[in-house]
Image (cartoon, rainbow, N blue to C red):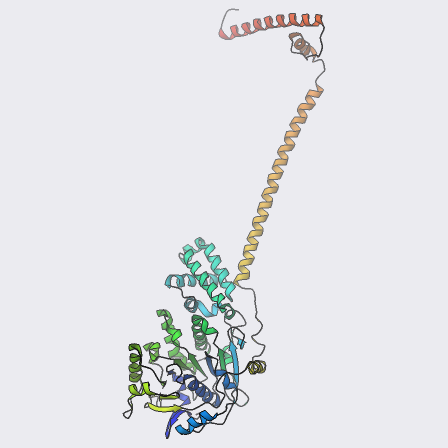
Length: 526
């Protein structure tokens, strides 16, 4: 069994965190500036010394100092002498820096499919109806064998489902354009905040969080979260995804002599603010069962009321820093914190919470039988490493010497939903263009055929006219005789007289013929 960890003391009173009970989770609370960050750093050092890897989010940028040797200044030395605390020898601890945006550490990525519709709906702040449509989008992508890896895949998939909503109604249900639009707007908002860098490949391998150095000390994984905090939902969703990934990846190990990993969840209130019931149930399930995977989870927040009762009841190790009872809600928080800690007959916990100095805390750790220890008013020990952030040069040096250097820096973009849908669209456009071209060729061929037929008809008529005799034969002569012949340009006086007589005779003969024909038709006498 690993040695107990001395976290806080006052004189002869020592508060020891037992490594075999550290996976029973914990809670660190207190108002701003009361010493929560120092407590977190001290606990992380204690775990690292016992070979336990640690993950913690660096919200204020102060925790990177754990990678450098610390020093005790004159002011701190005076405070420690007054409190009767002998500091540990200065030490640095193996540290790996991470950053979702890839600027202050190694990039951290997850695929859209791995994140899932439940956490993504939380990130996009979707209502119940919109979240249901998002689940349908994931289901359709799975059924069609389309991989959702990065943000452009999800956007292309949403557009594809929206454009073809009528084709999916019978099998999957109604898909409203309004819900698709809400999802697309949420994705654009996440992209504008830089969240699109979180989605993609290579995806984080959880095993890289669980490393030890050559001396057997656990590696402290520090996530740069100062910029990430500008997107609170992205921050909370990312940490919850990490916790869920640990739960789903690690095997069951039961109770160990020390945890396989300790996970500090800073600014934990962001995880529970306006969280839907389904998500709260998911968090409660993960927190309750991840203990059997050898993972200890420690929530860090200002007010114990930020944690739902269903989760709060599973946090056995407590460190309570000062709370200020300025408002009715603050007073309720003080009362709640006092009631949830094991009572000490020699201590008025509710009063002490409002009187604690910076670095002072009420501590109750689980004993060797798993029972909450009696609450003690003690001082948290200072860390052996540097208090405060490191320089840019030190950060670069840590990244270059890291065991995962070069593993996550280069992104991968293999064929996924975006490329497949784009290929389908281009193929459809090519088919349509081919069809249009064939239609145009057929139309041109038809027009050409009509023109050829017309020219052939005109040619035959011309040819017939050209082959007719010049004089017109007997009928032609008769036509000339009756005045229907070809008109001449000039005629003599005799010809004109002859034509006039011929015309009169022709008209009389014509009338006689017509009367004879009509008489025969109408039954008249001959």
